[in-house]
Length: 165
Image 1 (cartoon, rainbow, N blue to C red):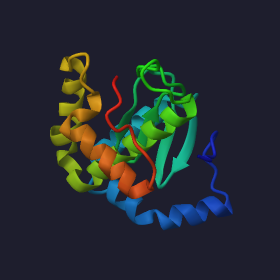
Image 2: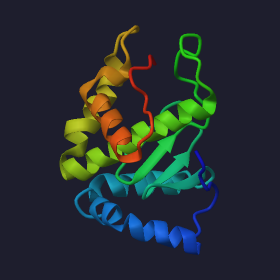
Image 3: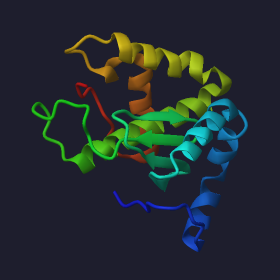
């Protein structure tokens, strides 16, 4: 996975990518405006983190032990600290790539659900993360499975599947 990290600068190649993803961005900034504003605020708070364009979304690699998506903004940890590394033999780069695909899937939920995103996917996912019992994958929950599916469909890459966390 090759990504540009650091400050977001619009070089000619980036301008072409931006134009290709313009419909995605416009829908996030209209139909998904509530979660996009929340994501933008989190982005501003995370200015010391590395950022990258990812298929029209803005990915932030922050120093938190979890990932989250808000509109067109994705926040993921730089290292995989949350999964059973004894059970799964993934490199940090592989698990980060899979988590990025998963969180990108949540951005498509935002496109589909618009202002209902927090009620249908966001809040239930947070609650599920708090009540989930050990031995059951976080990604077995409907909103998480759906995010995996959407992320894989729109990137062509592997997502989190049913990895235990």
